[in-house]
Amino acid sequence: MESPEAPGLTESTLVAPSPDRRTLDDVWLVVPLYNEAEVVGDVVRAALRTFPHIVCVDDGSSDESAARAREAGATVLRHAVNLGQGAALQTGIEYARSRPGAAYVVTFDADGQHQVEDAVSMVERARSEDLAIVFGSRFLDDRTRPGLLKRAVLRTAVWFTNRSTGLRLTDAHNGLRVLRVDAARTVDLHQDRMAHASEIVLQLGRTGLPWGEHPVHVLYTDYSRGKGQSLWNSVNILVDLVFK
Amino acid sequence: MLIQVILLAAIAVVAVLLTRSTADARHQAIRRLLLAGFVVASVAAIVFPQALSYLANLIGVGRGTDLLLYALVIAFVSYIATSHRRANQLSRKITLLTRELSLAEARIESVAKPEDTPPPAA
Image (cartoon, rainbow over the protein chains, first blue to last red):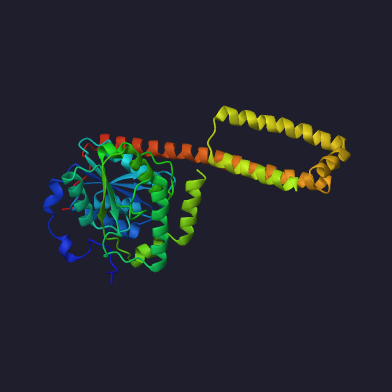
């Protein structure tokens, strides 16, 4: 089964920086951050070994998240009040796409669910296949094992997103995405809370830019399970999407 | 009964208004017209209580007070709708303001410290 610790904590990843680091100089990792002080330091440290540019958007956390992320070496933007993940993502994307030399923006979760290697291979794929958008999908291979209920909720979300966006995705609400800077410039999220995940697919789908899906491994740790989206949240997402 | 049709239609209109965004000026004008209509109707209901009952009977409601209650329900639901909309507009403004503040803060910091990202602890 899955290891209970956050990725990047194992000894093997604590050695020398990966050789990719220089070639990923034009990539900005955007990490929305809200009350993740426990894990964000390790997540940022692990990702910095590969990605030189990381911006965390601290969404008005009441804990030490921002300080932990800054200590770990990330650029930290701060929301004075808590607005929601969608708003934090938009702030981060706006910051990242305006950085000189930025060619790709990668959205990445702060809770350690995402694998740095997945992000790297998605960027490589975007480059080699000239894709403007690469969505991560946990359902393209069998590495990710969500529970039965979570699977059902996610499948429903996929169905809903596909219906409303016209894209044919196998996963929705997966926070790992690669956006080329021209795609990132089209993103203008108005959904401040969780419903942004459908909205961003909708906006990116409308651009007509070439996109692809890439298998990723979402690691459900006890930590992320404890904070994960509950069934109640999917009701809220649906209401947010209908009553804009 | 006719009253059911009317009430359901009114709720449907409110629901549509909730999901549609309309031009602000028109919205405001409608609200003011409705307010004027409300004043006239309430005066009429007070001055001619039998008229309210007559109207109620005409559309299949037993008593004038019942009609009043139904109207109140509709008014309440539309109040929810408009305040929901206003709350959304307000939170949009707060979002943009907070984002602007946060990006401005980052600009100030990058001026103070020209290096984009500090090197990771090595």
